[in-house]
Length: 157
Image 1 (cartoon, helix red, strand yellow):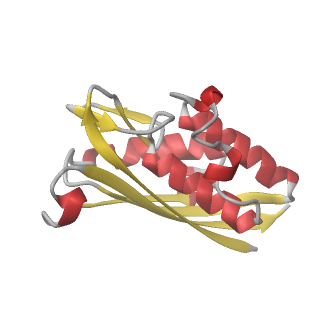
Image 2 (cartoon, rainbow, N blue to C red):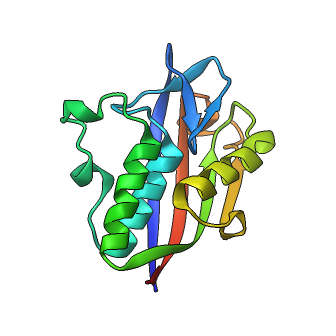
């Protein structure tokens, strides 16, 4: 068994769609990024790659490569998972925290959990999603950014 941690943060900007955990979220702003900016899936990718000893998202999908411009992060995660599987591992469970002052994510946690389970090809019982605010503190609290932390447990296949 291997444990991996992931973290990502992106700035909120006007004129972009907001995607979290592969779910389109209705909001007035979206996340700045080379791909779709999905901080949760980016953190999951880093956690999975880290646990398998396969580097990080920037090595696998560099923002200097135009083929990843506006890429769907779910596709990036599927590619990372293919590499994790090739290394002899599968996802046992995933625990996630999304940090956002707004939009309020509590009502979306079930949809995000279901989407993560679908992408990871695991049962929803193996996924946990939490949403936290920053109580008005810092860039996230001032509604300038959204971040995510993840922890994954991989098991040998």
